[in-house]
Length: 202
Image (tube, rainbow, N blue to C red; front, top):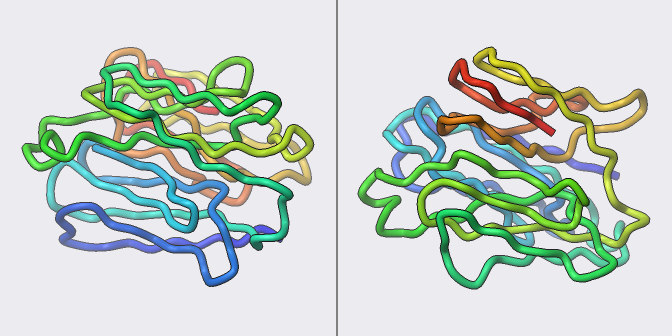
């Protein structure tokens, strides 16, 4: 069974965290900011978000029971880079992920994310922006998700799951801009954007 939680913090400063309930683990999540998104990434039992300026931060987390999947790993790149990738070990697949930013850049408000998303082969998670560490959630191939994508130049792009499937995470890539959010906007939709530039959501 999949469990979903959402929480909004008003007048927030600094990173915010939303936790799975006891006995559950993270398989997805996301954030929505009033300004640019600085970082958005999972831990084994939580999702962490940070925004560029003080304001409202909305967090989403998708959790499952600890025994629902045979093996779930969350891996983080060893060092921050402007373009950062982390691979799932073969034969595992990426079910989601995020971007963990360098603390001093977050404190200065100069960090940003241009891309937080999976690779074409579904085994990697990548981040692009300022100095970031990619974080990936890996699962056995039998538990790997179906990928649905959408591209447009509107303020927000939305990808919709096929019938009888649920959105558990969001991959977002913009052509030349940072974004305000990447999250599951409903049980079947993933959404990313915040600015009217070309973007792809998966």
